[in-house]
Image 1 (spheres, helix red, strand yellow):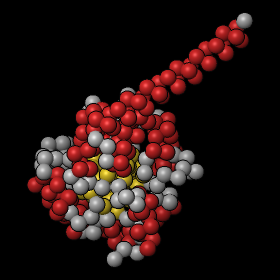
Image 2 (cartoon, protein in one colour):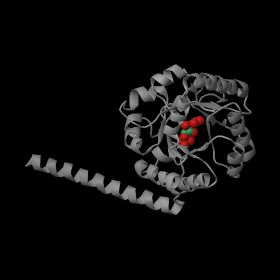
Image 3 (tube, protein in one colour):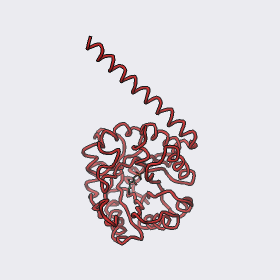
Image 4 (cartoon, helix red, strand yellow):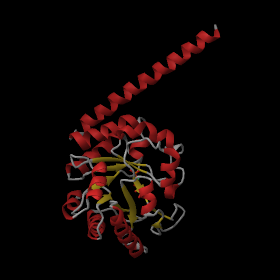
Length: 282
Ligand code: 5RP
């Protein structure tokens, strides 16, 4: 039975309908300046009001997120690897739960690499984080990471998700795959779907719909939102699927509608600026 504090924190992230739209912006912890996140503050600010939770590193929280933001933080607390590593699985804990509490985090997130050379270490890191998390009523999100050449099929992902839950993770992030419902059925805690590489918007919405209709508790999506041509429109389309059961077709219409409105708003602002400049020249 979870403590009141832990339940309260978790309920900030997973909303009362049992669903969540998390915005992942933690890529820099091993990828450095990822496309779309070069100026993290600029990217994150307009998206924050539409995210149920933000998943950054502590460096990005302290430098690029306003402290008056009401969006809950799911703090990335593992790292130590980089894209230059042949084997990405060599991760350790990078943040104490005490510092996560100082940042008023609503949960902490760590990657596990089942089947990798560092399987044992990453799983023991998870167990340690859960023990420490319970001391502070801090929920833990286990991310079932995959190495560069690792498969993402239902057999492997179900194994990783179940191991994470068995070790005590409060929720799990994993990839979509054929037979996703098997992962959901065999994992006793909520599953959120990672977005993965940037896809055309309609395909990303289809992916979201497939995961939600097969039992996912939401998404923790990064590139398919912040690398979209219209990120604010895209996150609202994703929300429509996650919280309002919209079909991909309906969600794509929502995307296109918001995109058009945002574009005309921008050109009006440009027009006003241009005419002010013309006036000042005369
Ligand atoms: C990496 C992560 C990232 O947060 C996540 O995968 C990035 O989101 P996306 O794939 O949607 O860009 O947990 O292990």
